[in-house]
Length: 276
Image 1: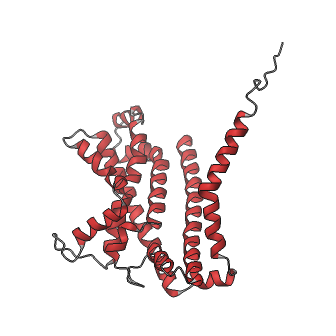
Image 2 (image 1 turned 30 degrees about the horizontal axis):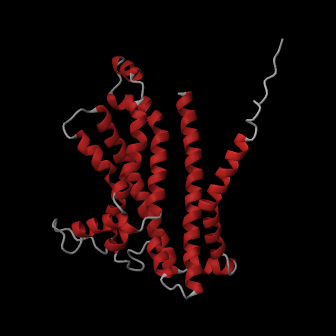
Image 3 (image 1 turned 90 degrees about the horizontal axis):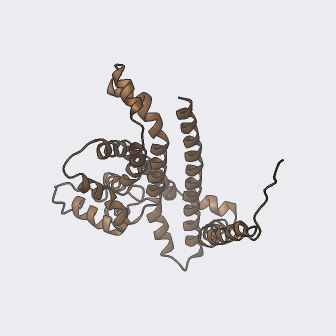
């Protein structure tokens, strides 16, 4: 005899109420502000939007922002895996200190990072290295603020990784490099992609750590976030506000496309790992 199970009395409205609260909260905090930015960007039509984002200074700032962000994210994707591997697989004095240093960029306000970078790599650098007003200074700052992302996404995967397959491969004569490439790397790939995407998203919108070291030189060290801030200083000029919204919309679209690409890459990586 089959017994039909239905929803328990009194619980039918629970999920609907929770879903409504979540939808309302996300709309107030995320969707409405983003919609306002996009609406402002296209407030004077598509031609004004295109005129704003095709300005040579804007194009140069966007190219610089994307180039530096991609470079910093890729470098820290590799460095993050190495650091996570050392923290999980090695035992050494000072491991807790290294853990603290990895998390430090999360805790520091970005403007404090900017002050640190300016003091360390500015005109009066104690190291004798002046990166103020240079793209190298921007790159170093982005490396600092994006360091934790790959480390903290890869480290839990390494901690939970079953090492029996590694030991079996080693016993069969596989080299450490082959073992890592064939067994460990496929498992780590989704986490590495997640860390890479988070680091790239953070770098695309970074402002505080860059504003001091960059000197905001147009066509040289001016990034998109600094350009947006500069446009907003002319609050009485509707055209400048619309230009700032247009640049912000480009970064928003880039972030959305990045999240979509990241989700696709993660799914494919998981399927390949399961197939292997």
